[in-house]
Figure 1 (cartoon, rainbow, N blue to C red):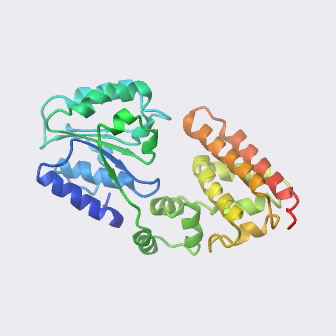
Figure 2 (tube, rainbow, N blue to C red):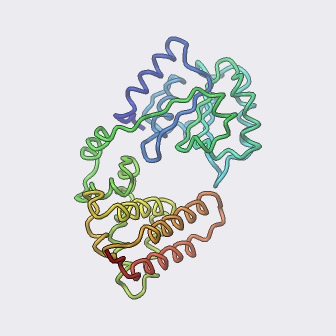
Figure 3 (cartoon, rainbow, N blue to C red):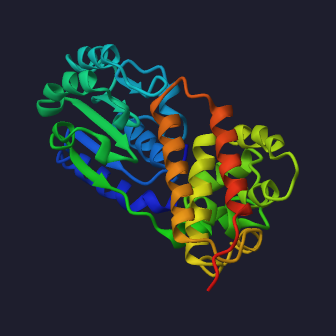
Length: 305
């Protein structure tokens, strides 16, 4: 798993501090979703352990490495208790111990509290690497005990990397739908993702929009809601909001009131919260609800000037 171009400056700074013995033992690495935060923490964990950094660390059977990620919607307390026990003691096969907590904002309250003492006083020779694309969701008590490293996206490097890495005639549209996040764009192309613009325009014209439920579910409804939201924001701003947005505004009434668009955007965000916060959300019903609301939005008469 290679280091991405926009991570190289941060990686150089982190390795320099590690070489000088100045790397904090509790780090919180943050970046927006889709910018390869996983790649950087993977590289850093393997670097600290003296391992080759071109493989997935979470699959590595190493006695001095623990990799924790959410189980469904949460990271439970029993997993953190196991990590705390692991952190104690001397390294068995390398220069240090490394514990990664990926998507640490999924820690439930009990798990976060169980981690506090270890974050505040990490055992000698142990590094705790937390990652989050939503650091504001972490309890302040966790954030305050970590050295925060905010990774700033570099849109130009991301665009160049995508042009060299993927083949897509509609790259500008895909970048728009994913908010410019290059890993999200590349993963979508690799998984056969269809740009949402066409599906949403189609939902306004076909007689049975419910036939589009399955295509939406196959693309992952959490991601779909984020991409859909960007189109709604562009509609609110007008058809010139982004050069990639051409067909969708033409498929809706020319002028919809800000109130109508805002109401639908609120519904999108509500559905997204249901999906993220619950393991039992009925995705099919939620997708059907959104398609129905979207179709009703398209049927509404345009606002007169």
